[in-house]
Amino acid sequence: MANNVKSPSGMLFFPHIWEVDNFNPTKSVFSAHIGLDVNPYHDYIQNIKRFIGAENVEEKEDWVLFDRIKLYRKKPTHPKNASGKYLIKAQMKSVLELPEGNKKQKPFVVNKKGEDIKRDTALEGCICSIHSKPTVYRKVSVISNILKGLVIFGFPNSNSEVLNDTEHRAI
Image (cartoon, rainbow, N blue to C red):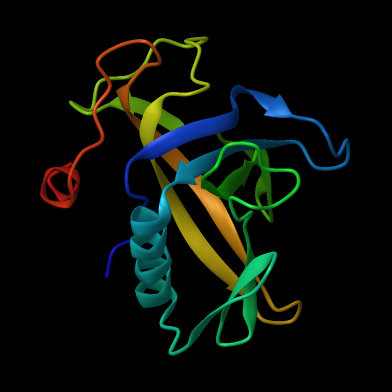
């Protein structure tokens, strides 16, 4: 079984990849939203379903239920979503608190050849795939989509390509 889930290629929104998102001052995280059209969105939901071993998937207004466990996302019609796409967020704590001490972490950011993307490169609007580990927290009935990294396929105003499913699996 894979250690993470790759989203289909889509557009990157609200990336906090080079600097942490301090919207919640008690929880600094790296985060990004992937914007997907309807078919890639449903493919991604099925990938998450397989990854967590869910039997049922049910679409609700503000979340998707996987066996009564919520994954929050914004539909294209959500009042706070002007993108026209399904938005799914992935985030990673900037510091893990472990018994042996705190460990800093950050997401990887590479191109489709696996080469590192230069730090501070503008990422908003890139065509990319988010690699994440959907993690179920049964006590609170929530799935946290833990960010692992991004694979960038193209930048805004370039000849960005959306890879088909076969090309995407090869990465």
